[in-house]
Length: 109
Length: 114
Image 1: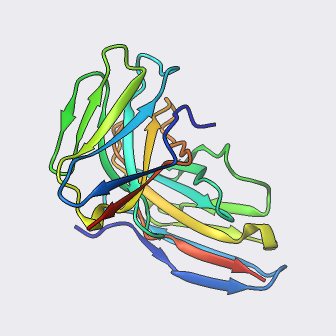
Image 2 (image 1 turned 180 degrees about the vertical axis):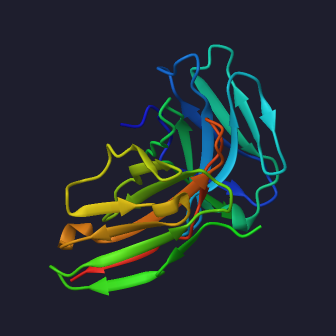
């Protein structure tokens, strides 16, 4: 079973920041937090990952709380093409990804 | 750099028939994974290859499914005989050798069993 909890859906206006929360209260010390997204029926796309420090790349920023029990994915300037299902995943030692139901983000004009 | 490719993109077969799905990982990626999503459910892990060896096959649903990765390059997933509940989208992903590395997914194969 997935070790994360996410809201089922969120809306965001185009050009605004999208902040997607994730709870992972049972995360272990050596487990990473990964974010993927799936646009329509395409294959999941990697976004970002982190262990305990905040991370930023060209796609997004990841903010992890100090106790590591929750995190937030930030898309700084959402576009219509960011409409997708976003998955927060805690990476288990065996390397497989365990997907939950994710958050369906709808970006509107 | 070419991404993960999967063939075919769609397959429609009758119950009881056999289907073979193929995945070509990114060149140089030792890790290859199979996942699937059936009937609107969550994406589920099937198995993980490291080169030609099966590292974890805990997600394989039953012995009707056979995965191979001869030579540690491309992989095939055979379903024989196919059942209605096997319908869904089958994804392949690959990653480099280092543990914890991100996985790159292919576009998937949509399998419909009628």
